[in-house]
Image 1 (cartoon, one colour):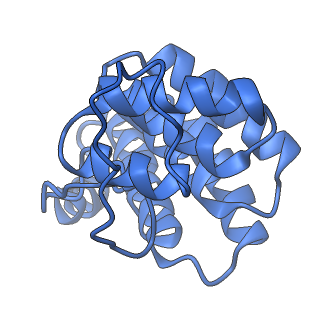
Image 2 (tube, helix red, strand yellow):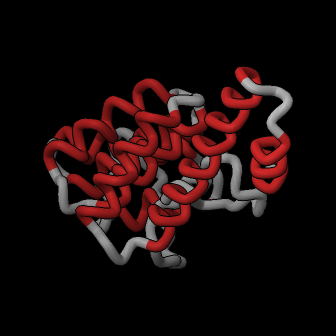
Image 3 (cartoon, rainbow, N blue to C red):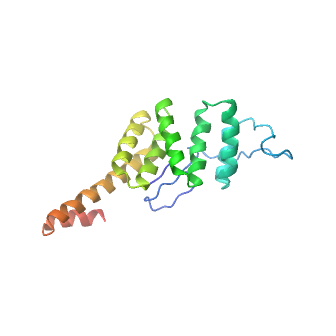
Length: 182
């Protein structure tokens, strides 16, 4: 399962968070002032992407919080804050931000995708399916969201076949179908 991520497992089964659909090499400016006193970078989302890419989610989160004090409705910064929280294993907080983003910025596909990936990782397949379907409807050219939706459909099919086999363990046709999915 891919979320909009900075790394890939290659297995297609674990959510992977990506900070944007394009890469960049921007790095936040360095300063001798303490982080809370240093001026904000000109382009906070690029600085956050760089920090997240370099595996510094705590610094990205601090930058997001400072930026959001000045501009609390900045969708890109909120989204990247959710990525930082996810990397810090604070997934509940990330989910709340992503839910809010899907309501406030329904045209943004990445929050739907990442929210769906987090739901899927928690085994909430029905919620993952519903949110990913909304995501692909809002941004029909978002390939990663379609891939994730396919992964969720596959997991749902496996779950359905497993339940059917519990109810009818001698059905050979059903067993063959289930085996094809595994």
